[in-house]
Amino acid sequence: MSISLKLRYFAALRDQVGREEEILELPVNTPEELYAALQQRYGLTLEPASLRVAVNDCFVPMDSPLAQGDQVVFIPPVAGG
Amino acid sequence: MSISLKLRYFAALRDQVGREEEILELPVNTPEELYAALQQRYGLTLEPASLRVAVNDCFVPMDSPLAQGDQVVFIPPVAGG
Amino acid sequence: MFQLSDQPLDITALRRQMQHPQAGAFASFEGWVRNHNEGRAVFRLAYEAYAELGQKEGEAILEEARQRFDIIDAACVHRVGALEIGDSAVWVGVAAAHRDAAFAACRYIIDEVKARVPIWKNETYPEGDSGWINAEYRATED
Amino acid sequence: MFQLSDQPLDITALRRQMQHPQAGAFASFEGWVRNHNEGRAVFRLAYEAYAELGQKEGEAILEEARQRFDIIDAACVHRVGALEIGDSAVWVGVAAAHRDAAFAACRYIIDEVKARVPIWKNETYPEGDSGWINAEYRATED
Image (cartoon, rainbow over the protein chains, first blue to last red):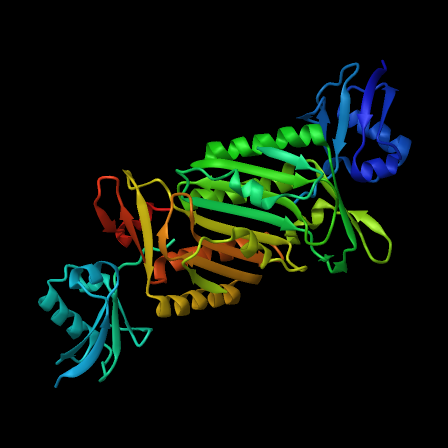
């Protein structure tokens, strides 16, 4: 069953996707499955192991459940400071 | 044999001696002997083991030789910062 | 106080906010934009942040520092947007009664901010190319 | 640059002198005059220095820091004379390419200055008495 998700993209991911955000309907249950779908769709080069994920502005595990309407952000390796 | 020494006093030592500097003729060969003489003269309460000594503005060991005209400063425990 | 700022940091004002009469020690750290990185000259630099999560994560780090160390106050401000060479990219300030806690908390905060706050650095080089600085490089960075 | 100063420290100007385009990390430390020490309220505080030796010893400490740590610049200024609550008694600043060296050198300098530079602190209490602060107390100090 597909759910509607709001995706926001930052840094290298935004460059590769070519947009800052979008709403997608996808048959995925977890961020892990979602990222695999995005990799296929956009040819993303970042390995899933190098990413963290935030759902509704909170860090969550990559295998946590996704719900209809969630906002999902994959976090490339950070480099502040 | 007595030598002439210029003494400068700081902090607790200056308070106990009651002056900032003086020239003394004393029959002493080392800062160690000099401090013992000053302790007797002024009733100084700081233990020699708690002091360092500078001769002519350089730290030296307490048993180094003193020469005619040397400037000697006994350094109470410091407390900067 | 954690803040993401798109304006140059006013270090004098930030420091003044940390002054408390019971504070005897103040440690601070700044990350400055260098004219080179990883052996390449850097022409321009910009930071991008995931602001909502960055704010929460920055506040969490400051709260952790207050729990772990005996400090009086701690703050951190990180720039976002375009920076010039010599600009402060990040400022951390910690006031404490004693210097052990001030140094330890200051170090904790900058380490955690660099590791956890979702901020990304993009460098442009004189040759015209640019890139997102990867955290894999961070072991040798400032 | 090591300096003994009988004027309030201009932290903004001191910091500015440490800015070098190759410096990516800046660590600084300040000792602030507190309103209490060892459980007693402090009314007034003065530092006395053996200036000739203090200058030499301070410069030696900065040179040691430059030898031991991979830093670009280091400086320290210590106040002498009467200070007010909240004044900076001492400032240490270190600029380096990376933060490890900046923190380590900053800590080294303040520790050595406190242990070795011939400066003495005299506190006056609201009760009217005063005393030279003994280094034996320093284990618990800032």
